[in-house]
Length: 168
Length: 283
Image (cartoon, rainbow over all chains, first blue to last red; front, side, top):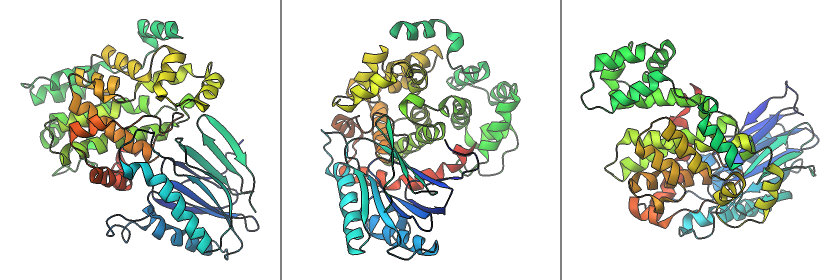
């Protein structure tokens, strides 16, 4: 049960939020991906809600860096630094990236999810941040809540919900 | 389950209601010869509604040319159709902000979903220069999935079985609603709007927004709302237990003339649109 005093921090579409224990950071994802960083020692974490892998126009990402993986992920690293965490102290988890129901004839909409996931993974690889848990793809939307007191994630998907406790 | 829903519609007391002032205003605005002073007088019968009209008229969303202090000024500055839009927005807020528990959507998310579908639909109509009334597009977007509010109440008894079946289900999500409840939320929404004596356009949108090919009277309007809904769901706003199981209709894209590039643009614009409607969400 959620204590009344626990602050819920909502992450909007194309948004990054961070916080510390005992707050809860929450977002809802369709094709977008949620990248979650959490430091079990310091009990701080941050979440990015990313819409697209790259800026298709090349003009929007400077104005809205949080929309695109290529610009949002460096920002997410920065947020962890601001929260007092060095690289190596926190680990990543990855959610979302659903694709449109089959029969979709738009290759753009069809592939958003998969592209988001692969670009995020490449980034984590390059930055040597361990990816602990992922729940990606499929046709379901997901709501994820990161409990900063112990780093568990409540994943709601397709009518079911479960806690994911792996944080390191 | 179907009998229970039929009973609900026979015994209107338990259905969400629209105030008599609002129905009267809807009817008056539908008449091209409506006198503004009469309309202002009707709205002023309801103090809460009057306050809401003035407050929303002055919001950044509606951007009046000069500050609006009375209902009459609001009608003259923004026009009767926009004021009707404001009134419906204010009236349906309480209904659409309800938590849709069985659908796994909270009240705020459903309200944001309804408003952003309305906003995006209007954007599509303007960008595609369609000959549909922009205010009707907004209202249709606002009310498209109102039937969920009613079906949500019936979920608790079937939820476990519903979820189990959903796990391995590949067909359109609403077939499951029909199987478990006897009605889809589209049929339920259309029935509710009929009860309210709402215009035929809005009823057809509620009925066919997930299968726009079946729209016979207002295919353009239904297609616009269908596309807007799919994009907003893809963005995760108001995404429910059914996930992304409503296929985007290529016929609808054709009817509205939406290209691959347009889809990309609409999707990318969602955060800006959400910002634009921020004030409407907070009312």
